[in-house]
Image (cartoon, rainbow, N blue to C red):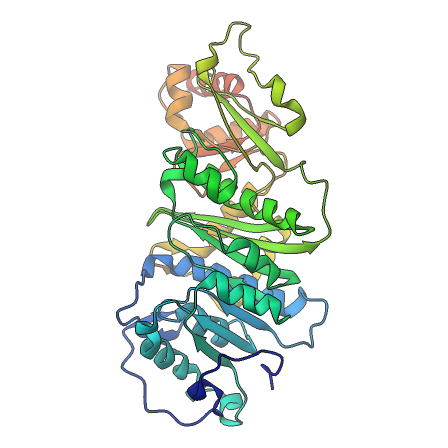
Length: 422
């Protein structure tokens, strides 16, 4: 039995063998061929791309990312809402067992009805094999109980609301070594520097307004999980980081790795100078040396420092390449769902994975304003920077922006050169 090692909630209705249930209510939504009814639960069809990414990542991890591929593949959805993510982990990612939890017991009928859709078409369910369970607990408490019972999961998905990150440590403890943790934040105020106390208490980072706030939001979430993992004697690797404007939503998939790394190489501070527009990163050993070389008399008020947060790559290029290959295999890449093309999105993420790229992005209108020229075409600017030997690409986080290791001063020179060549 796939869930033999999992202690099911102490509820008579959940401990009974799988049995025939009445037909679930009519479906009102569908994602990649999986039909469900959101009922009264909070549901955004715009978030389907984030769920697509999760299913692709989980599938890759099940196929070839685990030390023991023969072990049951276990997933836990800690804040499941209507149960669509749990359903998709079962139906598409090939999970042997999914624990679907939501604090609201009012959602129980709709969660059960949606998961029964998988049960009714599953040969394993007919044979009486337990494939899923539903519970209604506080997410942190549920995760802590799983750890105390030594019940570890391959994938833990926490689709939380707001910026409360109290569950992160418990989630890491309940995760298998090498497992995947899918984190969420919708705390745009902290990401944009309007809730510095909140970002400090939730993620250990003091955030102030920056020209690239939504990337700062992703780095804030990764940095908070990196800090928690280090406290537990582990380290994490970001596999991908995804920002979506609706919400807005910051989603990060990290992999838990055994042992501590050096602890500080990708965890530090980002400095931005309003005077010259240049951004830099600083480590803990450079805290007394934070400054900008644009002038010897730079006004201290022109320099903004945020952190500590994640300063390393937002994605793992090889993992994203495999995700894109799987999306093509399933026919997902070339289709547009809710206005999102996975082929385009994953392609931009792969380019963003270049380790030469520093944190942040530059708005095209900022370059043109400083260069005092009309904005050059984004593709032309990127190609020109690459010809000069710089790394440059679009950002999936914000339209009409570039990520590059070229200084602002050199970007201005390139933009003027494009104008003069016309």
